[in-house]
Image 1 (cartoon, one colour):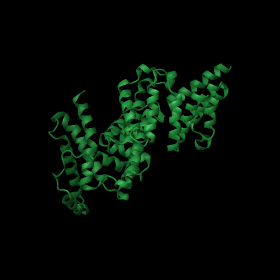
Image 2 (cartoon, rainbow, N blue to C red):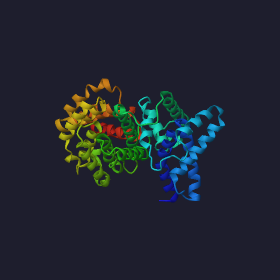
Image 3 (tube, one colour):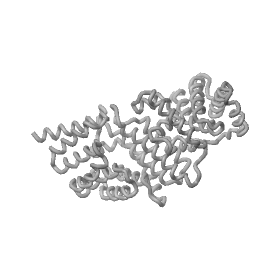
Image 4 (cartoon, rainbow, N blue to C red):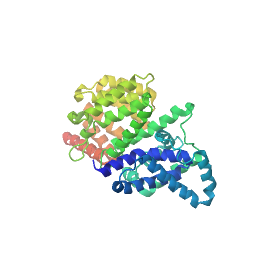
Length: 406
């Protein structure tokens, strides 16, 4: 790895710590976020030529604080605020090893924000990505993404959220918001909702990195452990999910020798730890399902009865129709396609027009031997998805069935 790449990795690691320190001292998230970005840019320009300072984190905090102080001094209306902040915590009193990343995550994932705003703000403030990088990842104009982040910061300011961990009675509810945002971030990276690529390794990688940080801070929390296990077990299959030309390869047809075995081993250990933690949650159950898939040497060795049982438990905990969609597939593998189709019927009202409902129905009808109806559902699904690899896969499936029907 080049020295520039090492510096970029270090800056990404330090970004949330520095932002947390500045927000905690001055209480102004918006201004702090801007000046920390300036400090990171200054480091990226100077450190490759001048070498790393003895205390990189302290250098960044000092640079950001200096720039923020200059901003306050240039605004006469903020002189009183600067003095108040200085009295609260004098410059130089920053604890050397204090890490506010977890507090920052809780702030960015506050329930007052929409999931889309929380994801964007988390990627900007905690992951250290630029607005342009985030906009590119989600295929939206940079100006639109900038407005989304700006509104999120305004909502945080208006809500009066203090820079502190939630009170004990609020902790679990707030933690669920954080885990949900990280799960959504990973899901978008693992299967991109739009565009030419099936997955975005940069997004899924950031989700894993941030969840690792959460796990390091909350190692005894079973759902945090379960979410990390789920991400690792799913991401381990990424090398085999696409072919030479980026085409989608379904789970049953993947070359399992290409799966990331060290990631699977770590995920298995974490999943087992998570399931032994007493009360079982959604991420623990999903991790257990992923572990059963990853533990099967061949597709035909998959323990579908146990997977079906776990989806049944998951359905009791979650009102997510996607859980029912996956349960229908598992039921078809255990009891036959008709059983799966019966479970799909109630989803027509809950997932009207969703391409995945058509895709699963096409798959089950294909299993049943009704190839004409299966092809029609594959075509309907292909017309509705915005993912190019998924569309191509569904079109190909429909074309093969049409050929059989001639």
